[in-house]
Length: 290
Image 1: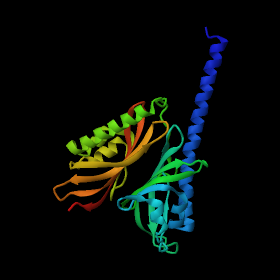
Image 2 (image 1 turned 135 degrees about the vertical axis):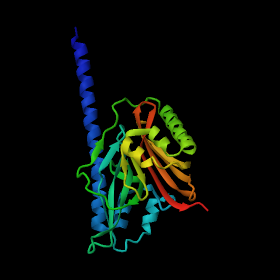
Image 3 (image 1 turned 90 degrees about the vertical axis):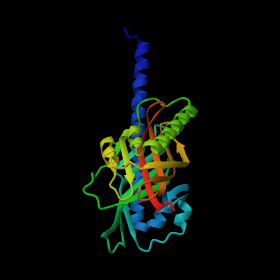
């Protein structure tokens, strides 16, 4: 028999759970709206002005090596070009301060010549500021051919329902352990190591390729790639909830035709406390190693 006291406790727990889900969904949609506002500002006022508006002071871009994006765009010249994009995937940490968006972009010569001359996929990592606004802290992208039809509404991946770890130091240690294991396996077995560590919703982004979404597509995209990869970590960060993180650095790939090099970024999410999986893996080649 359930007592009145127990009933009240159960109701309070259900109410708190419902409130948490609603808050997380609202925060997730606010990240998407921030990305849409960013894109609208670019179409209206140009690349330079919009990027300076929406970038955090310490935002990172690959141009081609990691550098401060705010400083880069301070001296950037639009030359009349028009950059448009839209998010088709987004997720957020349970703590609500770290979000991720990705989707297609197009570049046109100008507003009067709207036919796109280049296409690709962007990846943005957002952090909520003290004034509750969202700012981009990492902005990357890859080129590819013109994509086909894309869904009009973005896929929203809500945070896992598993409770956040109480020990954030422990969460950071398990993240580092997972990342080191992936780095070692990439060097030993090549890109197949990414699939072994992949989340079911993985987004694989590579230069001059369409995004591969989901474990099956990602596995097919990497099937013929057996080159051993050496990655060197540079920097990264983890959410306050210990459930979403990113890490980036440089890489070299040992191929018969040469040794391509460039930079990578991996976004990790927890599927259970302490169990990290790769949600996004971006690798962008910049040059051949001499």
